[in-house]
Amino acid sequence: MDVLWAEGGPLTAREVGRLIADRDLAPTTVMTVLDRLTRKGFLTRVRDGRAWRYEPAASRDAYIAELMLEALDMTGDRSAALTRFAQAVSGTEADVLRKALTELEEE
Amino acid sequence: MIAAVALAALAAVCALSAWRMTSVRWTWRAPRAAIALWQALGLTWGLASVGALLAYALEPWGRGVIHGLVYLVTHWREPSGLQRVGALAAGLALLTVLMAVVVVAMAQTLQARRRHRLLLSLVARDEPAVPGVRVVDHPGAAAYCVPGLKSQVVISEGTLSLLSRDELAAVLAHEDAHARERHDLVLLPFAALRWVLPWSKVVRDAHASVALLVEMAADDHARLRVPPKRLATALLRFGTAGAFATPHGALGMGAENVMARVNRLVKPGPAMRRRYRYGIVAGAALLTTSAPLLWFLPQ
Image 1: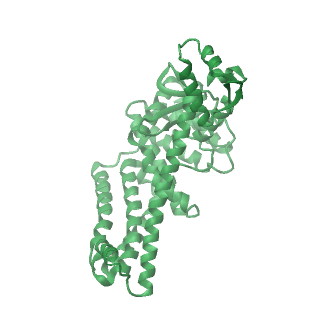
Image 2: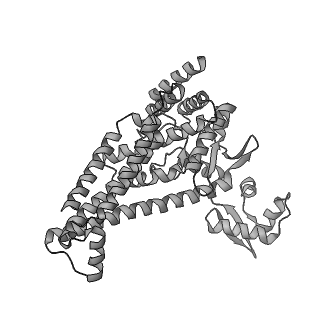
Image 3: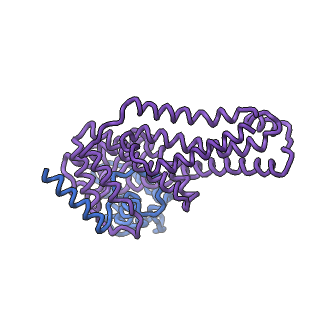
């Protein structure tokens, strides 16, 4: 996935395999992984002659943003899917906390 | 008639106690015991409400709810009188709705987690400084746990730069408690009930109370391993690190809850006597067994 994001253009399985140079992967392994990611909707592919060319369906930042929205409980569904440490508060409320923090640090 | 009246009274007592529990403060001194009591109240309320309706419907046969239902199914005979048939339908409908809501909520939660895990496997990275924790490259402050058989603790890049080493250790100890005690399972039925009854203030407050108690239980767990003051400063830093503008009025109780947790950590009051804590847990256990027993009461 990182290779595809770095490249910025559609790649074939063979090219992906070549770019992951630090690991000696069999072409079929690469193809299996790409195929699985495509089925899950993370990649799109187009025919190019006899091979498929793969491209990320969304950017890395888009997925990070999706994770963070859930992490900060801002999707609005208040689900119990995650347990969070604490949440940021807004404007005047934050001032109360900032004051308490200063007091605690001075002790 | 005794069973129906007793069950109806029990349901009323549970609802009334839940309403009281949302505003009392002694629960903060023994969060774990209070959570047990909340669970007992919720479960008993459901069983007693359903039981009261069914007990009234099946009362003429004098067999109790459980054996009355068995009789109904095996002999396929409906109770006489429109009122009793109505009560039977209402009782069975309520039971179905309550169970379906929990099942649907569980399915949705599992699906959301599966997607979240998948995304994490694509974009999160390991950080040598914090082994066993997944790091997401984002400047916002976030620290959370994706619960499951293999729970995963996740923090953001923003958290790494926001907190000192000790504070980070405190946050991780807190998240570890969530993961180990499966607090998500405690919250699930309350979240589910809130989802079907979004307009009910008691249900909303109940969910918020339990959510806060769960955080306090995790804080208590963390303070055994790290200095409580570090956990308190981490909480405050998190609260003030508003990387995003908060959505309209979604987090009204935010600061109040954070301050409640901070005050508990910095100035811990006298712990609740063990005797009382055990008393609460025993009361919760007694409450939980009362409704099923009444389901067997023949009259």
